[in-house]
Image 1 (tube, rainbow, N blue to C red):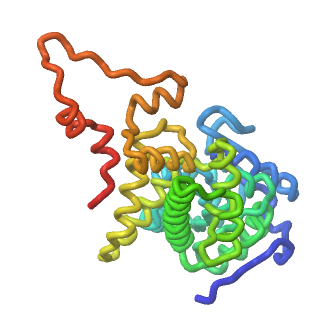
Image 2: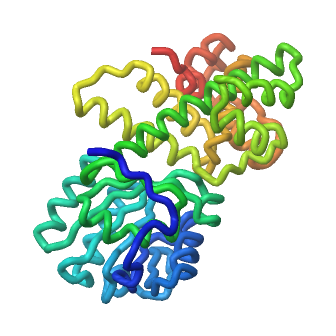
Image 3: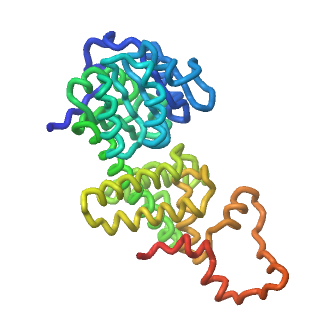
Length: 343
């Protein structure tokens, strides 16, 4: 299928869809809802944490022609959609804008089809700032007919909209995009670590790279905005990046492909996820990479230090136990096991 790239203002019959249900009012969902309302849609909202103007997903779905989900993963999407399903009429469309597993998306699509409801997967790229400014890039999977129906809804939230194939294709493209982004992130951060050790000034170095073939979102945005000033606040959690790389790895495995570099990338992000706090921003992987580059362990003590600013201390042995040697302790260290990234 030829990919379609759509921009704001290109759709017709904007009044065909009047009411949109929206489940998932997190960092991305709240500004996306605001943009839908700004575009003139009536939005019925629900979140499991009690936010929204409806008391349940089912109530939010009542009277809506489109149900949008923006949730952490496919399992949560499936649960939310099935709970809302009694409120949806035949002919409605479920628009999953989360990052979900393509296989699970297709399974849910088949289940919804038995009720006369279509599923369109439309994950996004652009982080919180893109959600606020309605400049998200949106990768859409679904039938051409369903895609045309939801296009006005998508255009209220995104700047570039790509119809990449049938149901599940959007989630596949999103996973592959984030795999590439994950690789670019750790490569860019390692380059920065090398540059600093060599004594390079990062700013002119980045200016040169960003005018050359090595530029990517990490050199253009993450390093100057999040690493150099020490803010570490891109708005995208590390756990979600690790999840998306895992989806790409699962997709490759399901297709019978051997992808060793993808496997190594996934191990790197999973190790960082274990070493950092659960709510860590994905750019905080730089802290783990820095620890590895300098030969330091990054485990529970480092996590506590990052939270409290206190220096970590070595724990005394319990009564009756002999204190192990430094070498033995290092060999058995969970932190070192977690950060062993080689195959």
